[in-house]
Length: 264
Image: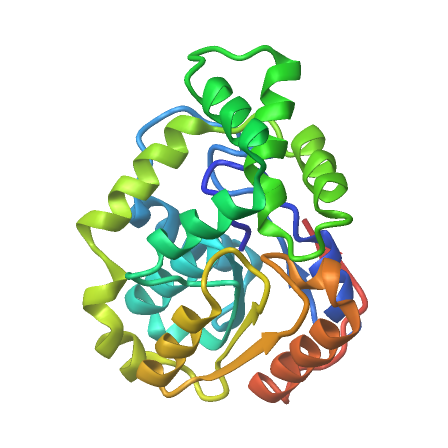
């Protein structure tokens, strides 16, 4: 379950890591990528979409893997349909308050004064050209990475491919998270958390790894923080991430028969 909200699916490299273990479904959330749609976005609508997709594929129970905003969506799905979640693996999230101030501080520290000024200038433009949008997204996203030597390269590649951004979807779902905050439902999450659930984050993410550790303590859930990795740990520490991720999948659904195919 990819992040955003408002960007298309980008989790192909993560699916590749486990496609010899199980059948992996990836999908563009309503309003993104090949599932473009215009309308009001709510958490409930997206939770319902996932339930319908599982029904269509004939799956009673699944292991959910979320990344970034996808960890929030996976959490809301677990709250609504705990009987359908056999396992839960959360990548780089969910981040529960307080965390935003630390994230903004880290992002600002990773930008030069010139980069920050240009980011703010582009952010203020109501309708950016395609070139301006790519520049804006690159300036927004390169701070996600711990490897400063390759951060710009990775962010630029994402900015060129993960478009168009559905900004209306982004605004609506971020606002929706505030009306039903996960912060107020941690006890309920802990009660419904499947055995073996795991959170995997990056020590060099601009979002504070300490927030994931605190959440893991509250959920009684294992947390693995990958050193020298940022918001996309499979890029920066592929060996360490692969080992942790595959182990999490294996232990949460040991009865899975190997299926050598994926569906997008």
